[in-house]
Amino acid sequence: MAKEYAKHDEEFKKMIVNLCETSKDKTMSDIAREYGITRASITQWRKKYGTITTSTGEITCNDEILKLQKKNRELEQEVEILKKVVAIFSKK
Image (cartoon, rainbow, N blue to C red; front, side):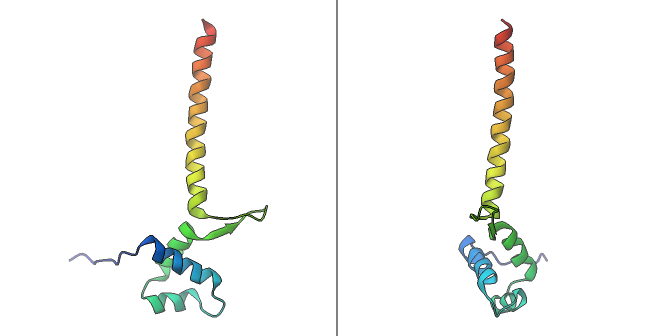
């Protein structure tokens, strides 16, 4: 029989990540035990929802960076397509 895994909503995950990042007296293991989740889950959530301070001092999260990278790839593809279209029409 397949093992059932608990489903946690996004707010819960963000709360746990925030707790890990701001708690001075609790380790990740302490938080995992307290909330009945695994350290591996917290690690995955930190990768997705954790905050990053950029070299300019801005604070962002991994999820936002991933979204921006995806959008950047899409825009690069559009630029390449437009370059090809311009090349085709400039020949005529």
